[in-house]
Image (cartoon, rainbow, N blue to C red; front, side, top):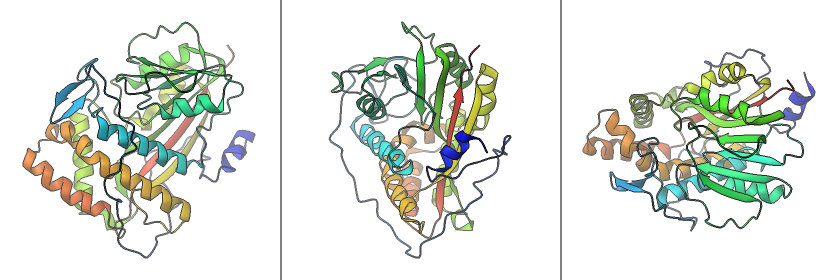
Length: 340
């Protein structure tokens, strides 16, 4: 086991030590199930962080990015911004407060792709005052004047040619499964825009909601998740594309690839206190996000508005049922640009 692998194990996270992991398999180490059968989303919650992007367009009763209209299929309005802030909390609890796992040292220039509301970029800049951090997104829903002086936000499509005035030491991307038409090309641009010895880190999922056991089979939540996957596929977004991240990174020229697989429970059904807390936050995340996810994606899967409302209501009820052991397969993958 390498020193890097040992460092990752100290984070308390399961490590896939296979040099060529079978990425089609489910997470092997199952979470222990708690005995309580019901859960609550806690109801709608607001973080108080809502920034309107003047370039937004209205559709399906929600607002979406107007820059490169149709490039991304989730909203950018207040409820979605709340959900993105909650999603940041999911990662924070899951990773014990760590913003990343790549062995980056003294990064001067840091890039956060698809930054969303910008919380990761702001926190990284605050914790690393000597780093200059840039967050990019199709939507300008980040603080107009960042409260952290070494952080700025730019409207950008990462599939366009990158025109930054300098290269980066660390490039971070989180939850990008539904973001890009050609993720491999984005990885290539990341490689080309990293300094030698720099790192890229992607924190993402594999597929969508699945089950640890037969409790998930035949549920409305299973049907909803399957139709979300189908709808995204019809819109040109493969939610299983993270199966190819390793090969795309290698093809771009990256080396020293490190990979973690982490189960992320969809409510507090695990017995383990940490994963129970993770599940509570992901439940809130999904509870907030189901309508936004379904607004464009489920019509693409062939559902009528009436069918969407009915199925989403049923799936939301399943989401709070702790006898349904649902989770999302989490993935962290880091790769280094070698000294050429």
